[in-house]
Image 1 (spheres, rainbow, N blue to C red):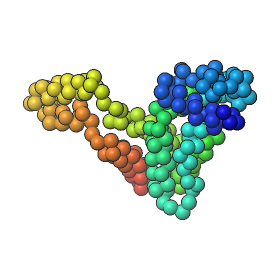
Image 2 (image 1 turned 90 degrees about the vertical axis):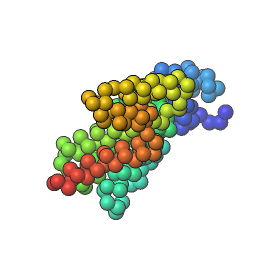
Image 3 (image 1 turned 45 degrees about the vertical axis):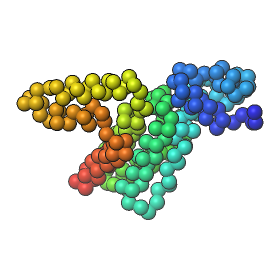
Image 4 (image 1 turned 60 degrees about the vertical axis):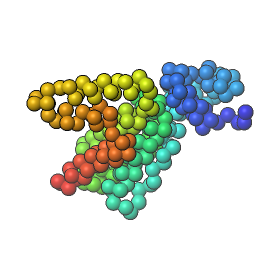
Length: 214
């Protein structure tokens, strides 16, 4: 193979994590897959903790939000949220990767975080509120990206969905009229595009409403 780079290592580590989970990502496994000795990887990452930091930095760097510009803060914040969701969905292991890192150790994470904080301040929020907004944005992005509506269907999953739908439809209509009425979308889910758009709109509309309240 060609020259071993941090990018090559991160990309292969993410591939393993996506396919087999983060526990499968080890220095020894990566060395085998990349055709090098473990010592060659230690030049880049001394341990798995540093390896995961490298994965996170590459992951977040992948959507590279645009630098702050003259557009309204709402548009810039939407770009940031949607970019983060796309990145999280591209890599199923992303949620676990982000859960294992200290943001201070990940330069690309710090850049995105700082940009989000700046946009919140531009919107007129105070320091404490701006910090909360960025935390809610990250958790919302993770939840939207990890939604069941984006998972591939299988015979077992289809059977489970059908059973849930029948169970909801079988509830006493006089006691639970709205659940019975909406049994199908509650059990089956909804179009992924609607789920994503509505989720982002819900988060950003709430932030805009709070900003307007002053």
